[in-house]
Figure (tube, rainbow, N blue to C red):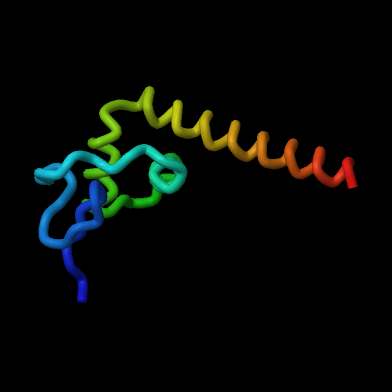
Length: 89
C-alpha cells in the first residue's frame, strides 16, 4: 500500500502542509530526517512530495543549515566522548 503519510505526526491521509496537528518536536530523529532530505536535494536527487512538504515545514534554508551544523556537532561530540571513554579504560 502506498498511502499518503504526514511527516508532522506520521498520520495517514494527508500531507504535512495540510496537517491540523502541531509539528513534531525537533528531536534527533527529526534533525536526521531533515539532514537526509537536505543531502538528497544537494545531490540533485528528485524529492518526493512528502519530502518537499517537510522541507517547507522547515521554513527556510537557514534552518536547514542549522540542522546540518547541529548534526555535525552531535557527531563530533559523540566521537569525542567515545575517545575520552576509551582513554579512561
